[in-house]
Length: 320
Image (tube, rainbow, N blue to C red; front, side, top):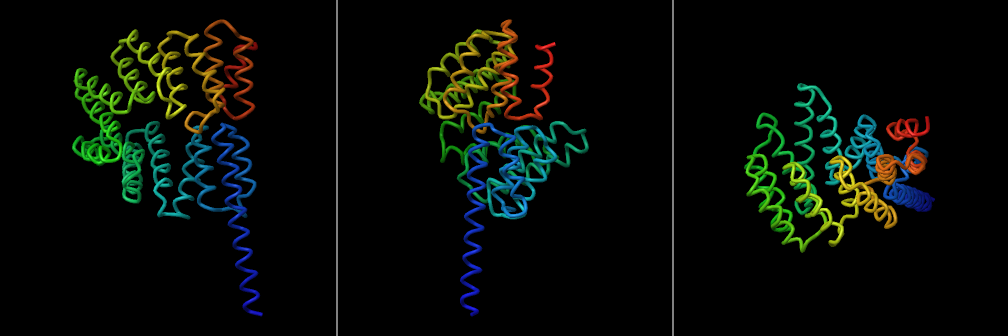
């Protein structure tokens, strides 16, 4: 009888784990497609029965996309509490703290910066081969003052380890160091080495374009973005970042529109949610005088994320 009860208990545990994984996979697909409202509804509807770490992390990432930092923090902290040995969960919590620090007053930002460092360092400790975690940590070291654990030498140490995993991306760190020192010549050389070693990957061209924009070399920036559009696209979200760069620079709106259409046709990814890509497309159409087309894009954005207030404001602007 006891053995039978144990078998029933194990079967129930297996079923619960399967259902939990199914919920996470379903929500992950929604999140990747930018269907934020559906993902949040799916995850919240199973809160009591699927209170697993993966679902909590997915919920955190959904709120992150919506820039709802408090809910994102709560969900990410829950994921870390449920599975403290997961590197990615610590990485996402660190990213949330970073966003909150950017928007906080000086004292609160200092406290949050310490938390960012702790989470990124923990992520790297748990998975030393995670290049994204090491890049985030290197970026923190470059941006943060020494009093909260920042420092150029620490960033260089991360770059040296990144070189053993992805030699191309090592040069992004060196380029950022040079930019901080206002050494534009060295920075450009490092960005171009990144391009060469990555075999002309689109993300490398994006980083060069960002540098050229900061240098106010807009014509060369546009040339780099053309190269981006013709290059190997390991990360499709660079198309959205390129379009946003052109929008913010007030240049080549038709080209930016073309990049966004290409992105949406190829299938959006989580790093550039479809609701944000639609909103940006609306802004570009509005700039080109197509208010009706812009309104359609704002409505499409809101159909995916009804609480995306900036899209609602834009829709009100073009329909009233």
